Amino acid sequence: MAIVKTPYKAAAVNPLKMSQPLGASYAFMGMNRCMPMMHGSQGCTSFGLVLLVRHFREAIPLQTTAMNEVTTIMGGYDNIERAVLNIRQRAKPDLIAICSTGLTETKGDDVDAYLKLIRQRHPDVNDTALVYASTADYVGAFQDGWAKAVTALIQHLVEPVAARDVRQINVLPGCHLTPGDIEELREIIEAFDLRPTFLPDVSGSLDGHMTEEFSPTTLGGTTLEQARAMGAAVHTLALGEHMRPCAAALQTQAGVPYTVLQRLTGLSGSDEFMTELSRISGVAVPSKYRRQRSQLQDAMLDAHFFIGGKRIAIGAEPDLLWALSMGLTELGAKIVAAVTTTQSPLLELLPTEEVLIGDLEDLEQRAKGCDLLITHSHGRQAAHRLRIPLHRAGMPMFDRLGAGQRVTVGYRGTREFLCEIGNIFLAHPHEAAPDSWPLPETGHASDAEIPAH
Image 1: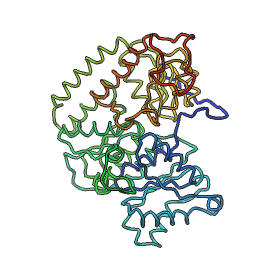
Image 2: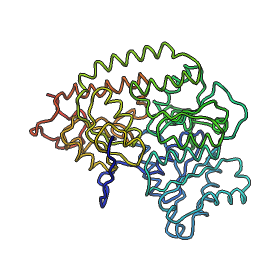
Image 3: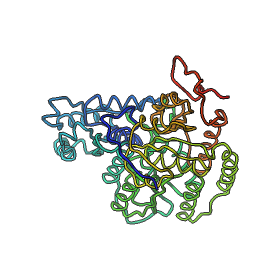
């Protein structure tokens, strides 16, 4: 059992975590014809917008209430009213989804009351769904904001239904799953003769597809009709521990029972997923996935020669940290440094001695002597200084193409992930780099810049 520690530093150095409002905004982007909006200053929204654009390399719809010094003191009702009316008139979205920031949370704006008043004063707004999530950025982290946004969507949109559809299931994916992961999961679930409704579904809106017409809102994702019909499902799958409160809210709202699957990466995690789908559907695991399981076993046999015994340092959100750590320890890797962003029940169960809720400086200090560093793109300088390879995981990933299309779930995704890690060690076979290796004089460190010898 790991010991969870929180350092008390004067400031974060090279922060690992991202804020709740950014996580909530990302979740709202998985809704079709939605306009996410941050209730705060323009700077808060601009930062999140740039990060998402660099990660996905797509146009990102994200608006702001543009609070300033005066409106912050006097209250943000006028700004929210003006923003809602302008967005409705110009973009004509089906859903306007609002998340708070530290600025407005400190002031104490009652946004739920604001939205009720706006509907009373402007009845024509009733054709647009308005959803609000309270996501102060001075507490929690990215996955907390995502979970709060999904909970808000459930509470505002899902309607109780008397009859159940035995072939319909709800899937609540965690923020650590990419659009490519969700596409893979949909294909697997449909193979069991089930109809999944993902909430949210970023695979429809942020998968990088080309369209013939411009849309100022999100284009693709879960529709309002699909969200409202989730009460008719026979079961809910919550993918990630941080989605447990969302599944519980859906059960309270519509009486749909749920199962939490803490990870889908690794042999045992994929086995649990397939077993649960077979139980819900009454359909035996298709031969396609039985063959993929045997292919994964063969890949594990091949890769364990290179991964087994390696010392690995990981910095990621709790659910992603759990999935990567457990997937690698199945092949005998040792997690010697684990740094994360927020509290989670999974942290104490990680296969390491200590888990730190900290920043990338903490990760770099603990990664000395390791064979591999796993974190997002902001860890590239640390890997450069440590002279060890970097495997990029999580968000943001702005110095590699195809971040949204990566697949690490199920038998096929796990096989690709393990082969990628194994190939890193094949390219850099020695456990430690000699001090004589020269550092590049210019540019950023990358996997290719670590000499192989």
